[in-house]
Length: 421
Ligand code: DSN
Image 1: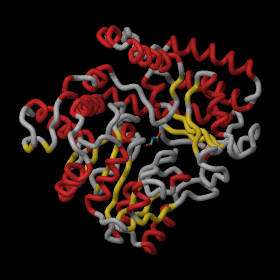
Image 2: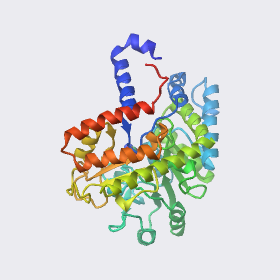
Image 3: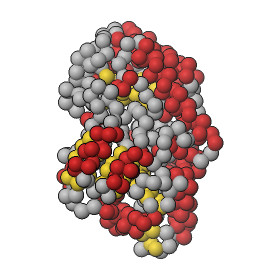
Image 4: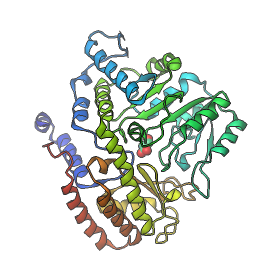
């Protein structure tokens, strides 16, 4: 594999090999990351990358798109079937442009949108002032509660009645609990607003039926395809048929040019994989693993936001973890964990007094380890290692010892063993 690349461009080849080794030899615990199948990788790297196909199936601006149409229609049909959706647009390059497409499809610049604050688990494209969303639209933000760190649907309802936004966004990047999509849609209906769910983090859990679904009632649903869904890096938008034309126009020609058909092919492959019975087992195992990890961490004195998880995701609160007890140390602890081969990311926690550049939390999750077939016993072991590092962060000997054990564990659960480059 990669023989031509190796011969022609040893520098690029060597960087790719190094990254493969890093993925194989560390515990990947960033909750938005995953390992897709070899079939998805193959489709992503296929000759479809050579083709321009601006437009939509059967309505292209370039000739030669017969087989491209076949693959895009396949992806659309599978996306609709997987999620029980009326319409699918599989062309979005990624989550941010996909959210932009949803907003501009039915809203005007300056319109009011309601979403969760980024610091409480929302996303940059949910109205952060430095992002296009916050610059173009008038966002009002709801929050999680200070004491429970949960969403209070009664308060969200009251805020919606007061603010009367034209769209309400649900779906988050750092919220470890279940989301009541039905309630969000009912609130939106009551004020004649559009409901929009960004399910990027939990799409795989929804497909596996271990998280409540926003379908078929939510007006617009956006998901990236590379997180729990375990597909290629990209996105898809699903919506009710009555918004299909506006949405398609917003994606192309509104925001994008030629679609990345190699990625669309890989999306088609991943949607099919996610409809298999094994995927239900995969989704269940992600949550079982996450709960075991959360329990282990809490038993070892680590404070978790909302005191646990219902999903793939865990947020460690270092301020209220006794052995740390200070704000702004998320990055330092994430670096210490990485030295031990445990890859996570620092993250703000609700009501974080520290800056987003030096936040007080660590975000981690189980989708990638579950793809490596790890189960509860491994999670309990990894949880003990994480707690040990956090509780004794100055002890370099412990970090070195854990690094060796992580190596051993990685060997027991090989990743891409038959990729030979
Ligand atoms: N960067 C993604 C995440 O890690 O959650 C969101 O876009």
